[in-house]
Image (cartoon, rainbow, N blue to C red; front, side, top):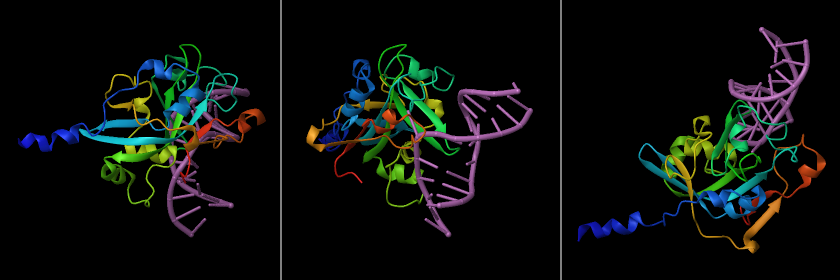
Length: 205
DNA sequence: AGCACGATCTGA
DNA sequence: CAGATCGTGCTA
């Protein structure tokens, strides 16, 4: 029957939305396990999907590179709440940054999603990015531009499966994972600058 | 109310 | 490697 031709397309990806307990852990563990998972965005009826290939963990008051270092403010409030919520902020007068809140209520933590590899809706991502070269979504600012993410999504619950959420992908074995110091935190204390809390897919960039 | 600066990106 | 560009948080 005719609809068989369309059936397989709809189940190209197993829909398994990541649950809150996934996020409710130390942000370093979450960052590591985020690699290989899918970031999904529903935008004007279109579905955009990418495989997460780079992420950075930010902790609480003990991490001088973290927005939570100097306590709670209106901007970073999501970091202090329950896990599984988006934290989006604006930097350099230009770029949005998409984070996932981790840990437990009252204990701030987040993971910055730095890069995805487009799996679905690549054309739409390119359109949103404009004609700015072949590289799509390497870099947290570009990623947000490609997915149409801005601060209106800060505080959004990622476990409801609407607007933006994460789904289970193929887990990456340790031999495919590279770690290193986080990017753009020159102002932070040496111990935080040196910490290898950036996780990325090997052979990426 | 004013100010310094940032979890960045681009193109010269 | 400088410039863009503006929200945020700190000082007053």
